[in-house]
Image 1: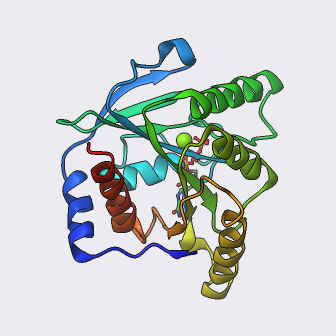
Image 2 (image 1 turned 135 degrees about the vertical axis):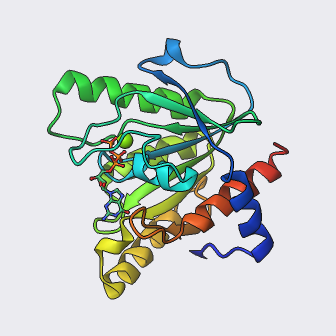
Length: 217
Ligand code: GTP
Ligand code: MG
């Protein structure tokens, strides 16, 4: 288990993939609004407020593409973005584990997220975002167990690395890696990011390009 490292060529491929202007496609509040399964999808999952929408904006280099907020529970639908010329989609998901929201809302988001992760056949990978200040929580492990069972490949991405001191970051990386090693469908490389400083964004782009190349997309 280690942090991902990419060659100059892989980084260039990632850069090329995200140089184009990605577009908003649709917002699905429930399963019946999902687009037909076509091409490949990459989903961003994680606890409420972990920084999913911000990371997508950093990735595509467009601050306002996905809506972000200081308050948890901003993203309430499955939001689709696509590459302008390829059948490749990024899915921004509602967060899970937001205890302060009304019970019915939490239940609806959780059902939407779990149903999607379990049953989407063209889902090539899930980026599982983990706040660098907090590490993995029980609710993350529940999602990881679901992904293991559904055999959906996922990769852990630490967010908000700018908010922690280097020694604290090293400690969290160690503890996340240790837990990942016990999960069958977890990708063995962790990516450390900050949407604020741009740390790890080229790596995340390269990881996405590499994945699409592997899948022949
Ligand atoms: P939900 O849609 O509510 O689940 O949240 P989300 O996971 O999409 O989080 P979002 O991107 O809306 O970000 C939540 C808050 O964290 C916002 O105030 C962001 O500005 C902040 N944030 C996100 N990424 C970073 C980061 O890398 N560093 C710092 N310092 N703040 C960040
Ligand atoms: Mg969001």
